[in-house]
Amino acid sequence: MDEESILRDFERLEERLNGLVSTCEALSAENSQLSARVRELTEKLSAFEQTENRMREERSAVRQKIEGLLARLGEQSRS
Image 1 (cartoon, rainbow, N blue to C red):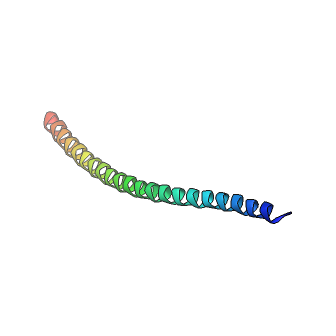
Image 2: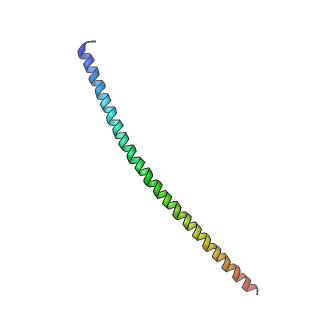
């Protein structure tokens, strides 16, 4: 191998390394964006779950009140 051939090989290697560095930087930026999106969606999911739990509790309380009223009506109709 002559010196010129070795220099060309190093230039190609440098180009490939630069491409890999660029790809790594792009993937790192994308990863940061995706991580932020995951955090955002996790927060939304948590808020949704809290709302769902609150609504479930409210529905249960309403159901208990209705059952109590129906029981009272049943008692009155037997009297």
